[in-house]
Image: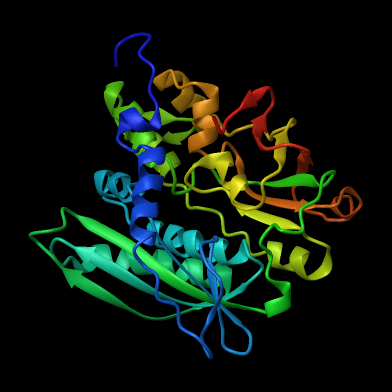
Amino acid sequence: MNKGEKFDYAKAGVDIRKEEKAIKALIGKIKHIRKGFGEPILMGHYASVIDVGVGLAITTDGVGSKIMIAEALNKFDTIGIDCVAMNVNDLIAIGAEPIAMVDYIAIQKPDERVMEEIAVGLEKGCEIANITLVGGETATLPEMINGIDLVGTAIGVVEKDKIITGEKIEIGDVIVAIESSGIHSNGLTLARKVVEKSGLSYEDEFDGKTIGEELLTPTRIYIEVLDIVKNYDVHGLAHITGGGMLNLKRLKNVRFVIDKPLKPQKIFNFIQELGNVDEDEMYRTFNMGMGFMIILPKDEAKKIDIGKIVGYVDEGSGVYVKDLRIDK
């Protein structure tokens, strides 16, 4: 990497704005909606919900380019946790309790050891989330897949009158952030490009382990949030995935101010310095140590025993971290 060269997600190969336009182009052509039993009552959020008497919540996600680090290290026993986490956390983000999941594994060629290691992570993730992996599909696609891809679809249940979308968010509410386990499964394309362009190896030492091992730290599963949802007046929930703090914009058109963010783990500072990445770009790409957020009244926030108040909801619009507006 040239000295002084700035790196960002788009330069790494992922342009969030172009991705949003492509998704809108896809969604814009899909119009048919079922009526009656199974009719959708929430679409386009972290998870969607259909009416089967209770709300049946559905979501799908994958591990993404984190798998490329697993392949580089020939270590696959944690990416299954990421697959479970990325799905169940999105269910939790609308107040749904995860109950089951199916997986899809596309492979270039069969490898018994690799599949066994993936299963170890899937089993651990299901145990943490208290869900059952009820089935799945494996496809051998030598002409399409270079390596492995791992995705999942999870379902959960939620009472129809208790779905949390963010519409209840009010001016004066506070934002409680729960600490992430690290980089999770988002922004790895940028992280990988920064490491590779710098001439470093995933085997190089970082904070008592290797860079690769740090980047493979499994995504945290925020199952404890369900207890908060059941016992407190929660107005909004945000799983901080792709797009970083911009995920707050999914909830409501208000001004989200994060004036006291949690201290990011060392890996984020490492990526920022190594790639000369602007701070606003870091907060648009990564969770920056804040993997899940709960928005609720201040009096309620004082009662809960997880997380820390990092900001508040104000009049206006946009997402602000300290003195940076990151949604522009």
